[in-house]
Image (cartoon, rainbow, N blue to C red; front, side, top):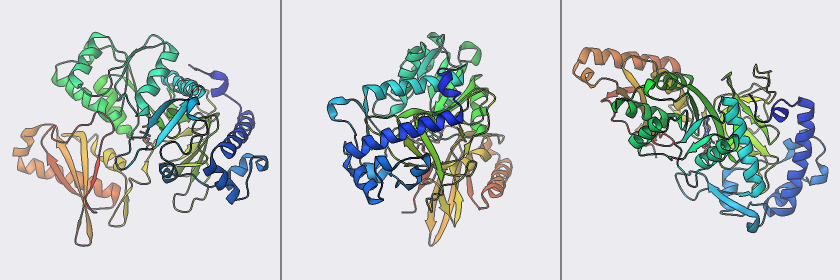
Amino acid sequence: MFWAKEQECIQRDDLKNLQLLRLKETITRVYNHVPFYKKRLDSVGLSPEKISSLEDLKEIPFTTKDDIREHYPYGLFAEPMKKIVRIHASSGTTGKPTVVGYTKNDLNTWSELVARVIVAAGGNENDIAQVAFGYGLFTGAFGLHYGLEKIGATVVPTSSGNTEKQIMLMKDFETTLLVSTPSYALYMAEVAQEMGIKKCDLKLRLGLFGAEGSTEEMRNELEQRWGIIATENYGMSELIGPGVSGECMVKNGMHIAEDHFIPEIIDPETGKVLDWGEKGELVITTITKEGFPLLRYRTKDITWLNNDPCNCGRTLARMAKVQGRSDDMLIIKGVNVFPSQIESVLIGTEHIGPHYQMIVRKKGYVDTLEVLVELTDGRMLEKFSELENLERTIKHKLYTVLGLDAKVKLVEPKTIQRSTGKARRVIDLRN
Ligand code: DLL
């Protein structure tokens, strides 16, 4: 099923022509309306009329989150405030947030793109869709909300938190589609179980999960616990919010809306553009946004692109699951560690639950990694030899995957903090 078949199945040559046309429009827009971009483009001798092919994109300097911060709050907007009808901001944990603005057309583009993601995942007008993302400056809830309305689904805007009520409503309202982060969906499953609610008491059939990373193991866990098809989608407030890419029913990579975003993969160290299939940092140029266009924005997300034909018929390239963010990649004793690697080891190991936390410390000059893992049955804590065996098994598996000695601490069920939004897996105490 398609929401915008013509665009989603566009021939590559036509796509390239469209991208070039839209790129030129975007460059003209920012050159004329955003002093920051005029200066940047002038500094490398570029101006709108000099852009004649998509290859010219490579000459444009990258834009970073710091650039956005330095122009807080509205300095990179390409339209006057009277044309801006909505503001969102990123969920930055420190300092000022990054602020983004939408014109009326941007909001329309956004809901179209999210509608594509929902339909590609198997959502339709018959769905009763519970949006368990937090409503507010975060783009997740509003993004999915308007996309769901666009396709004609029934939206239940529960927002995040108040988990027991959330589940009661899910049952009473006969929710068929759940929108949340994967970690919150997992927590909700746990609470549903405690409430004595079984899969067969619910009508849930489809999950649209995003806003944070998750592994295939996590997907399996979610599919089993809820008895649903779990799909993933990706986005970022700076780029538009959710709607940048999403999985089709083949569930093998997320199709990027390339008619609105030009993706590149670069080496995060050198900035060199890499080939299709090579792993690196995703860089995105928006080519239809009016309020807040971005040229070659460094997302920090590590992934790779796949341009092979997909069985669903979409021609739009797919991006692989995000492997981690280049800035939450931990370097422990010189070894690169992503939380996703740890997750793939833990989920699926017997006697332990899918919740975990990594604590990094510095002892003298040496980094240490401790992984807290929850037991599924607290009684195990009294069985010393079994406990020891389990710890040893996990330690060994972690060593095989990371090449690093980690301390494993098994803790009582439900003692690791649950999140109703993006999970915080890493606690780095080194600085
Ligand atoms: O998380 C937008 C969004 C909302 C996407 C709902 C999908 C669903 P931000 O709060 O700006 O925007 O955070 C963006 O979240 O750079 C990634 O690191 C991470 N992220 C988003 N989706 C995924 C995903 C929204 N599917 C940052 N896998 C991004 C891994 C993801 N990471």
